[in-house]
Length: 117
Image: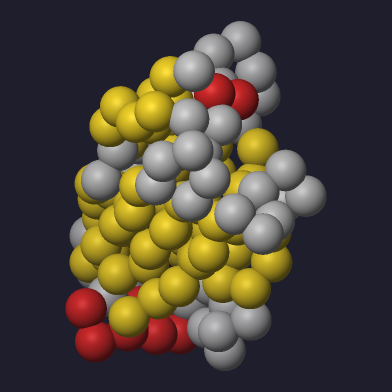
C-alpha cells in the first residue's frame, strides 16, 4: 500500500523558513519522481516544485530562488526547504507521487503552512 506522509508545516512570520518532509512507503522511492503541490484558500492546487529520480529539479516561478526541493533515497523522503516566506505562500502543501500506480494518483494528506505578515 502506497502512503505519503507530510510533516513540518506550521506558523511562521514573513521572511522566515520552514522545512517540509514527505516520507513514502509502499514504493521503490528512488525510482520515482516526486512533487510538492500547494493549495491556498480559494485557489486551485498548483505545482510548487518537482524532483526527478535523477535529481533534476524544477520550480514554479513564484518560489524560484526561495524554495529548494531535495530527496534522500535512503530515508524514502523528499524535502521542501522554504526560505524567505511570504504571506502569499500560505497554503496546504501536498506531496505527490510523480506517476499513477494501478490507475491511482497518490497524494499525502497535506500540511498547513501559514505565513503571517
